[in-house]
Amino acid sequence: MKLLQDKTALITGASRGIGRSHALLFADEGANIIFTDLKQNEQSDALVAELRAKGVRADFLASNASDFAQTQEVAAWVQENYGRLDILVNNAGITRDQLILRMSVEDWNMVMDVNLRSVFNYTKAFAPMMMRQRSGSIVNISSIVGLNGNAGQCNYAASKAGIIGFTRSIAKELGSRGIRCNAVAPGFIETPMTQQLSEEVRKEWMKQIPLHRGGLDTDVAHVSLFLASDLAAYVTGQVISCDGGLAIN
Image (tube, rainbow, N blue to C red; front, side):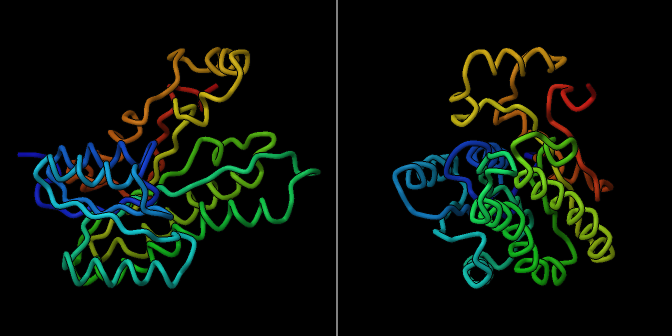
C-alpha cells in the first residue's frame, strides 16, 4: 500500500521547485493534492494535469499565503470540496538578501510576511479541521540558515528560525488532538535560484558539504514524505536537517 493512500495534502507555493517535488512525490504515494501559489499560470496548469494523470484528485488555488483572509477562504474551499485535510506542507518562501546596513524595511517585512506569517496563517486556518478529525500532520519548510544564520540573510534567517520555534510550540499545543508538527531544514539545494550563483561561490559551498554535492528538490520531499506519513506516527516537534551534513561543520 502506498504511504499516503487516500490522504489529502495541501502544499503552499508549489508551482515549482521544492513545493512541486512535494506535490509529485505525494501523489505518487497516493495522496490527493491541493496546491497554492500567487497566480495561475502555465506552470500551475501543467502541474495539475501531471498530478491528475497519476490517478489522484488535484486542484490549484491562486492565493497569497501571507494574506490571512485569503488563507481562510482556502480552508473554507477545502472543507467544502474535500471535507478534510490530512497533511499541510507550509512551503511558501522567498529571499531578499542584503547586508543589514543596506536592507530596506520593505525587504525585511516581505520576507517575514511570506516565510513566517504564511505558516501562522495556514496552520491557524486548518488547525480546527484537523482538531475535529483528531489527526493531521503539519510539515514546515525551514532552513539550516534558520539554525546557523548567514551573513546577508538576517531577514531570511529570522523567518526560518521563527518557523522552528513555531513548529515546536504547535507540536505541544496540538499533540493531544493527534496532530503532529515537524520541520525540515534544507541546506544548499539545487534550484534555479542557486544555479544563478557564480561557479566560484558554488565550489566554496560544495567544499563545506560532507557529501560534496548540492541537494535535490526530491531529497527534501522525501524527508517530508516520512514526516507526513504514518511511518512518523510518534515523531513531532522535530527539525530534520536535509543538508548533506553542512550543519555539522
